[in-house]
Each structure stands twice: as C-alpha cells, then as structure tokens.
Length: 406
Image 1: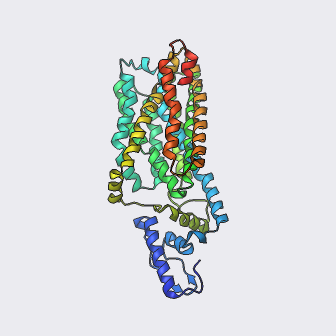
Image 2: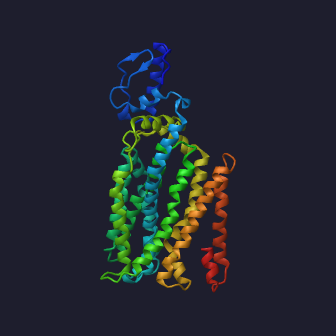
Image 3: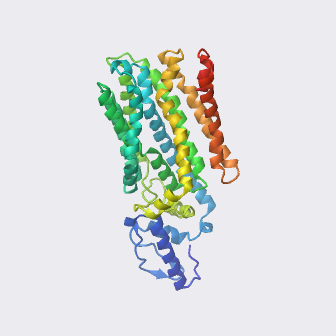
C-alpha cells in the first residue's frame, strides 16, 4: 500500500507510473481510466476495469507482495492451469499419432494406399501446419486465448472424426492438411498461457509438467489402440480409432471453455486481492500479460538475433526424427514381428520413458549453472542419436535390441 505520510505529488507520480506499467501489462481495450479522487494516505480504486493499475498501485514494488500470499496464489495456479494444459497436450500428441495406429489396423489396405501415399499423408499434416502457423498466432493474439485454444482443440477432434469417413487417399489428404493447420496453435498457445500466470523463474518447471503429458499421450495412445483393436463392430477398426479419439478430444474442448481462463482479470476461483497479487508479481517478467497489438520492432529484433536462427536449426534437427517416430513407429514395431495388439501395447513403455526423460531434464535445468539450458538440451539428445545409430547398425534379426533402440 502507499505510505500514509507520502505527499500528494508523490502519490500522483506513483499512480502515473502504475498506469504506464498497467498499459504495458494490459491490452489496448483495458487502458487504465483516470483516477478521479486522490487523498493523502489513501489511493481509491481506479474507475472502470482498471485492475492492472490497481494491482501496481497497491503493490508498487516486488517487496510489497507478501511472500506467503504469493505462494498461496502460485499453488492455486498450479492446481488450475497445469493439469488443464497437461490434458490438452495429451490430446495434442494422441491426435498426431492416431494415423500411425490406424495404419496397423488396416487403413492402408482399406483405402488401397499405394507406394509412398502413406508418407504423403504423414507429411501433409505439417504442410497445413506451416501454412497456418503464423496467421493462427496472429489470430490468437487478438482473441481470448482460452477460448481460441478450445475452438482449435474442438476442431482437432471434429476433423479426426471426419477422417473416419474417408474413402480414398485424396479425401484423407485434404483432412490431414486441415488437421495440421488447426494444430499449429498448440505449442505457442501453451507457452503464452504459461507466461501469463507464471514468472520466468517458475516457467521451466511448469512447462516440464504439462510437457510430460507428451509421454502420457504416447502411453495412452497405446492403451487406446489396444482397446480399439478389441472392438468387434460394423466398422473397420481404424475408423473407430479416429472416431473414439476425436470424440474425446472435442468433448474435452467443450469442458475447456469452462476450465481455462482467458486472463487474470476473468479467472475463476480467485478473490479480488489474489488477482491483484497475481498481476503485480508478473511485473518481474517485463513482458506484459495481455497484448493485443503487434510490436514490429520486437519481431525485427528477433529475426536479426542469431540465436533465433540457432534455435530454429535446433528445432528442425530435433523434429525431423520426431515426425518420423510419430507416424511410422507402429509400422516399424510391427515390422519387427509383433502382432497388431502387441504393437499398440509397446507404446506404453515408450511413453513412460518419455515422462522420465522430461523429468530428468527439468531437474538438470534446475540444478545446472545459469544460462546452460541449451547445453542440457544438447546432452539429452545424445541417447536419441545413439538409438538411431543402434537401430541402423544392429543386425536385422536383433529384434529386441532394435526395439530398445527405437
């Protein structure tokens, strides 16, 4: 709170500074209204929706935030945001691997895919991603992020269910491109939402927590595939794969509208004072909370920074094998001599290993010296490289060894 002994001019100066900071943290539509009354020793609440100015006026410095209350707010955010994003990431990965499970359940034979048509179905997903990634991010910036993410996840499920009705290669190809376009928002949305509620120091562990659901998605995809493989219905098993996963995905999107907040202003389950603490503590990030305008200067700075291109290269070399594993791992495992149902089940240990590896990476990031995250990433890629070499160089009849490498 503002010191009761402060002069009126000091109060006005503090309020002006709070308004300037609030405009950076808020969005253009939430600009702080003029404070109509000023009394020595007391700052009235700003008129209108001025929660950003109110937060910064009530907590003008980081030291003014009670650490016990801040810890309470952080724990409530952990219980609300992280599990929700985790389930979203679960569906994000299961959705991407549905095609690979459909392939072992007869999709290639039923649609009479020839030559490299299955490979094109795998690649076409990322064509849609590339085309729509930037426009989708621009739309998210101008939209309530929770609602926008929920809409896209609903479309993931809807398009999956539509793929169950595919009759030929061309129809499935078009639907795969659309699926990729709607999934392009996933990682940016998860990162944006995390940065809205957690400080820089808190973000790595929170990102690791919801990212670990990647591995749960790998294991869950195997369990779902095994269950679907036992369905004896009127449709081919691969069609049930698309229908079941798509239905659950769209149902989750509907629940997401109620569960995921759009901003600290509208978050449910927090008192007004807790919202003020939530907003004021984000000043440490120096990035703002809600920004609906594009800062072209920041874009230019990012493109001129060599580190941007190094991370682009890192993303490229790490995702080339990732795309292959996502779409072809089930076919490779089946090619090692396993039947369809056992192939599906073998996704479970792979998913468990992913969860463990992400957890170890989070611990390494926490205890390694500062500014060593890139080194941690490089070290944790070594087993992937070793596994690829082992699979390539192992004898063709070394089924168990090649499976471990995979």
